Length: 225
Image (tube, rainbow, N blue to C red):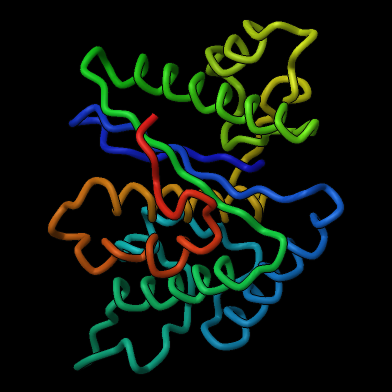
């Protein structure tokens, strides 16, 4: 399970999105994503090593290519938002079509500070994972974006009863800049956040979760947790 967070701190909204698959499907899931990254390089000049951070490139802030397609240049002006959204849709289509992949998202809106809300939402998410894994007699590893400096994530796992734990070890933190799979989770989290927090400026993506990710989500959409 590869997990990333999103949300809207000003309103207390915290969102977690993730991608998950069986360990023996790891290579095929990653290959499907890498095939899309190679196509983005061939067609759009987006390097495979370029981090795709949804908040940046979808909103036109990230310069992820040095040769933007001509269809996104009008009167000599490069329209990076339009380009970023085309890249995002290509990536979402890959998630939708990747066999053996599941996605999910949960959210919580708190009033006692976003740090507390984030901690409580993550704890509830891990409890959800633990229950689902217990039903199937399965074990799992959880990978998260970050450097592990936030100890609340570690505490969530260590507060569980060891004899019953299904998530192996604490969350393993990875830098999203070097992990394609964390970047997949980032896109799920961003898309879920836009689906929940319907800011007018993001209206173009309000239905992206339903349209592109819903069929890969057993619950068909982000759930309050």
